[in-house]
Length: 152
Image 1 (cartoon, rainbow, N blue to C red):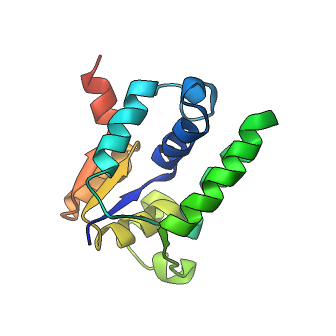
Image 2 (image 1 turned 135 degrees about the horizontal axis):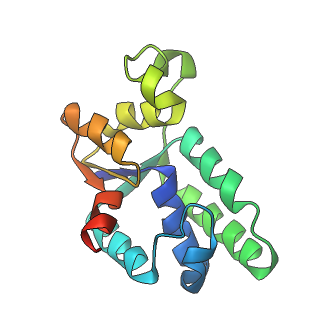
Image 3 (image 1 turned 135 degrees about the vertical axis):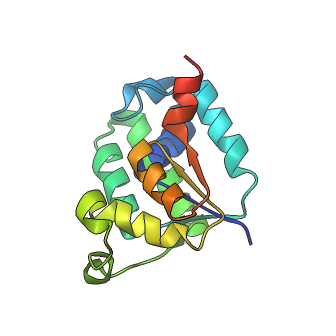
């Protein structure tokens, strides 16, 4: 199995593109992304068998996207229910996560991502700082922000 883990910002892009690809720029944390970026992400994800996630990532995503209203809200709820069935959710105890040296710098969610990414084939993140720490630990990463900057 080839596993990929995506941080909350990229997970939001992944979901919003499925909700309504024409509204990608409308949602918090997505104003820099376009429909083309969404399709580029889908192309990367197509090379992997499973998306690994955590309660921390899903909570951050839901805190942003649960504010959606109207028809998009119903699409969001239907889509996430399907995504929850397809992803592998791993739980790490916060106390355990907090024992790592990078916790002081990265916090709970990003530290959990680092720990889980060690067992994945790729980490995709829109957070260059997280990517830098992951790379320093020998984790294969795709820095989406670096990709966005290269397009300028």
